[in-house]
Image (cartoon, rainbow, N blue to C red; front, side, top):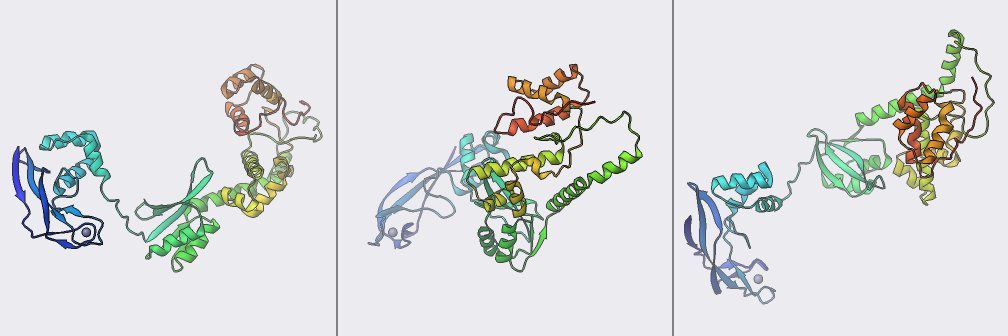
Length: 383
Ligand SMILES: [Zn+2]
């Protein structure tokens, strides 16, 4: 080990409490900060530091210890350059591997020390991006929504905001001038926030939300016009078997499970009614679920999701249809494994796919109410 004896020769020091200069030495003691190793040997300073009396009567601090700028800091057992070297090692290798490498250098430290030095580094201040992306993220299983800001060009997160309010976004943008483009979804609070906080910035809808909106609109449009498609095919394709006499629409739910659009509508309906039951306003639901107010109203006024379908799927049957009561009974018995149930109904003559069974059972799993022992629409088995 190499020991280096040192002392400060300044006439006095500045009080860290009030900043006033003091030359009244109160006493001194030794400190032994470790410095960078030399030729594989540990280097330890033997530093005599002085205690000064603060002469400022209004200062709460009566005495203070001098620090050598660029060399020591309060309570640190290492010099500043030793600290920064170990912090760099820790950033590259983290605790355990960092401690091993430091030992090779001759600066033996524990892995916890390496991590502590990394932890003590100041938070890096990300640069204000030219193009910022604004979106929400969910916490606590979607009960709390917050805002994330991303540098679109650097593809790095820039900041997190504690809520999803226009005012918060506006305040952040106002604090960070220089943003030229705000990339956002179509949520009104982000639009409002961007207009207030960065009035000169161009607002663009981001690609993900454009594509999603487009595909949802196309799907809605196609399902709205399915009846025409069915008519065309019925005329052109000869029926393989004589069509069974169509059972008149009975009360209950005549539409199918496993249809994507129907499932989604049902899920939305359930979500809206759950929130209404929990006492949320329609405005609040609109914001929480990211729907338009009209959609919320439509879902809220419909007592059952079937009321929203306007008979779109009424005439369709799946292979699964006749096995639905069986699935309900087995579910009520406690058998909730879709694969097992699929195997069972296959032995009873079901020829459909496993996926259809799984999709049919999916709402049972998320629904707060256990499904009835029989499906809500007992229909006559025909054909
Ligand atoms: Zn002072």
